[in-house]
Image 1: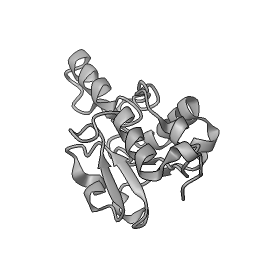
Image 2 (image 1 turned 180 degrees about the vertical axis):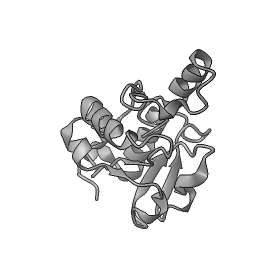
Image 3 (image 1 turned 90 degrees about the vertical axis):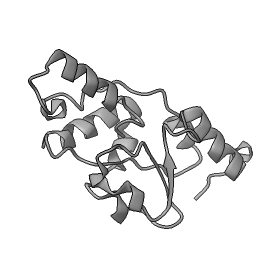
Image 4 (image 1 turned 90 degrees about the horizontal axis):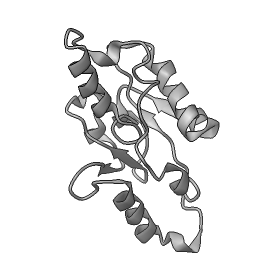
Length: 150
């Protein structure tokens, strides 16, 4: 979610500039609820795939569980919110046939690098944006046929 569907990193940097005395801006009430969305293809890809949001909670803000849930419903709809998973260890969720689109932040506590399926490194040279990610799935699964992939 953070850095893939919403602009965590921009909000974090701005908060540090505006409030340099706050060491962990993400610990502040409302931080996660107020993140700006990144232009993404979640709605488009959900027409073809069973998409789930997998996000790690912030150890600095116990309210992030609620705020992330509220953010997803507000920006992606109730169905997306009802199928989201908030889990501190992403390696225990999913199976070999699943994909994880993640920004691989520097805080490797969520262990996304140990995910059992295919990891798509969002923001990398290979997958710099949602257009590239979408094209990968369109080409791989020939989505022009409009068949729902499993």
